[in-house]
Amino acid sequence: MKNLPKPKFHTTIEIVCDFYEIEPHLLFERTRAQPIAQARQIVMFIMYELGGMRRAELAVRFSRDWSAIQQSIQKMSRELNFNSHLRRDIIKLAEKATLAALKENKEPV
Image (cartoon, rainbow, N blue to C red; front, side):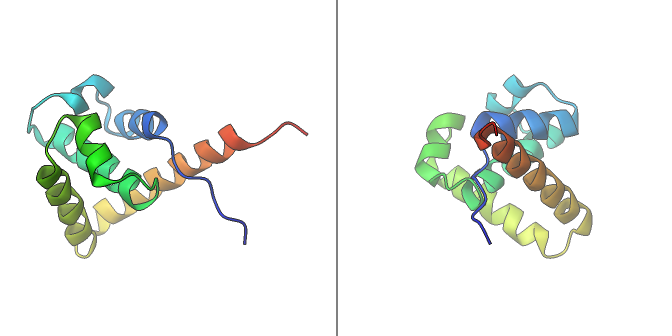
């Protein structure tokens, strides 16, 4: 099986924000409002697990410290084990982000 391309950061943000119906700039604010914080954590998780981004790079992009990124990724990992709705949403969002990266990388025939 051919390796799939890694999701792109900005595309993943657009996909997640569209899904949760929030403005992308809100992910970069310091707010802890639930839908915004969850969307931010999902982007971090997808980009870490599938996008190959290091925690340090995510920390810079989100203006957070490394430990906050680590905590967010661990929280998503734990919640995937018992929250089937969140698991379904993350799978759907990760698939969309990967398909978008595939389309971006596809060369014209």
